Image 1: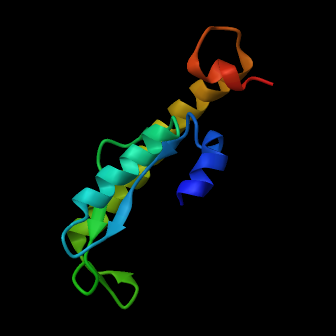
Image 2: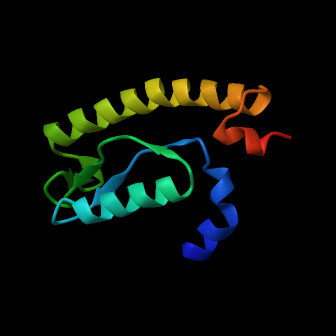
Length: 107
């Protein structure tokens, strides 16, 4: 993973990350590490992540928990809304002339 990110981090610069973790312990450490990865790639991340437990929240490859379904619906909405805003600004930064972080990636 480290080698991949060393070579391809620019693909993620200025884009939105959302984390979903399968964990028996609710995945707080993994979620924090994934946010760190996003920051190291100069990406944005949602301020929260979703974690679930197999055979409790997900059974037979289906969402079984109403709480998980609600969190997933919220994440889908937030990725759609905030992703569109960030993508619009990313496009403007890449095509504009303002001094900004993404300006270094202009072609």
